[in-house]
Image (cartoon, rainbow, N blue to C red):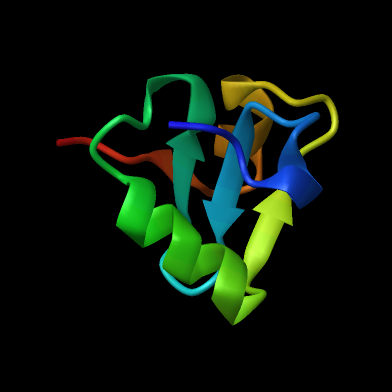
Length: 64
């Protein structure tokens, strides 16, 4: 899946509503979910853009 254009510089984006983080490099089956998340404007990004930083902020990686 292509990254949403406004988040093209980020690998990880989080859903503020559920505290779930999505890895955009490995989100082949999550395209519809990510599109809805971006549309809802409830997206969190992380600096640095790493999974440990997302976990540090209370987010957990989306699992299949």
